[in-house]
Length: 213
Image 1 (cartoon, one colour):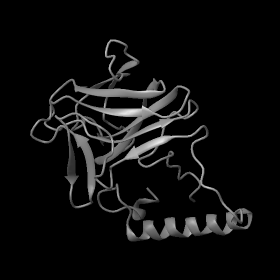
Image 2 (cartoon, one colour):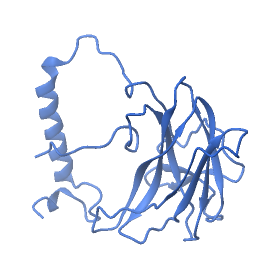
Image 3 (cartoon, one colour):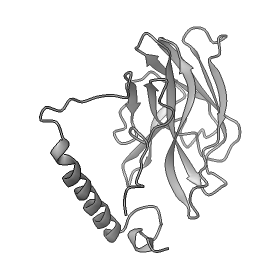
């Protein structure tokens, strides 16, 4: 590939030349857009508002979660964290409570770890969402497959998926591994967003590098 020299040997992280290229492209974008930048910018959100929580980089979580779960420092070298049932209980079940603070239904997006190409080191996992204190009223039930087929080389990344529409108030998000791969399902973030938002990135909106030359 003509872009091979922009990547490190693992073909996941960027090389020195790759970082330089991205920096140059970002500089071009800033120089192009800066003249139209407002003098008094305002911080916005995702359309109708959002309530997002990520512990991927900090290891700090202010959501209520099951006693069976813990904040796992799964990658000490790069300082990455996930909510899981821990390496000693890879087939364990867990849950976390999310809150929709708005007065209308909102999409719920989860971010979780995945690997690729197949097979993944992570188990296929059933996600069940229901209102707090009413487990009989299932809002959604789906199976996540934490694997990516977007790369020919081995990668360890974060995927995001819309898993439910949650009503105003608190909802329980339960995960149940459907197999034992030796690694626990690892959750890195939750996002309660507008109904027009279907996906997100590790820390927010989808990454889009298509404008880089």
